[in-house]
Image (cartoon, rainbow, N blue to C red):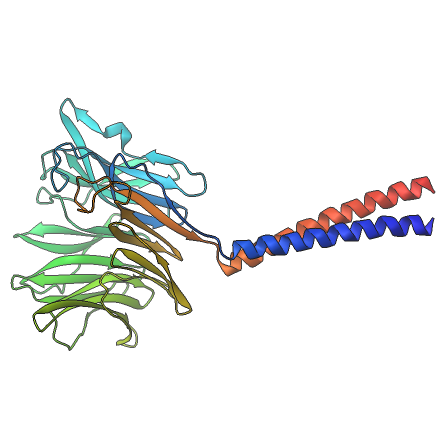
Length: 393
């Protein structure tokens, strides 16, 4: 009787060891699981992707006229892709066609949590533009009451938390405003110099970072504290032609600086800490760095680099690649790799690409879950076998 039970247990534990080895092998495979894939077909001109969590949003257009840029007379709309389900949704589909010959021209989507904002106007009428919000959870869309008749195509806006920061033209210059969409509260961001116009926006829950430029192309960066309304300016003492804030995470800002050395233009990027008021990292020959925690991402010579202080991964591009947004260690970009043209113009069909990585923490978590499942299965087998053995005895 004892020998028979021993043989059963030996088989059980042998099975356990095999499952554990398989789990370790599976986990080690996941450690190298970096996925790059296209999430849009190449028969459209897809551009300006933005990512938050499992959702990616971008603009889709049809270049009917074959010009270098998408015209207001051409239809464009906003697409939403969910990474987990693999489903793509046209969130503006119901209102693509206003009436015969007049189409929706939607632009510049941005996403935070389950909220998407974008601007849209009827085709050919740049003075009939409004800002819209779409709720991914409820699938509701509503027009935000923050635009005047002076608002025109190409203005800037971004969303984070309860706040939307946007620009509006006044006397030919872009001015910046804050809008809390939960309470309907407006706030003008003062501090932009009289002769300056807003050139770029980025924000998080604490700060709005505004790049401004005047008529003689002098640039300055304004740091606006949302809670206190205090304003400071980012200082860069070196000679430069342009300085642009491209990204913010917590108290850190990514800044790109254009210099002219011996009649040659050169971009360099820096990371700046608002609290310490100092630059703490330089990335040579790069413009448009994106940051998230310890991760940085940027484009260089059509290749995309992403990583942390431990090292950078390279996503090689055979044609034009435009890096667009970052969320944690995931990035999205647009590329005309499948269009068969090197021009990079709107006549090419651009696809949206994403790169996902299974982190070390996720690998460990999945390994632990796998081992728990294996142990649970083996425990059930042992109990069943033991009950059968007991009945046999």
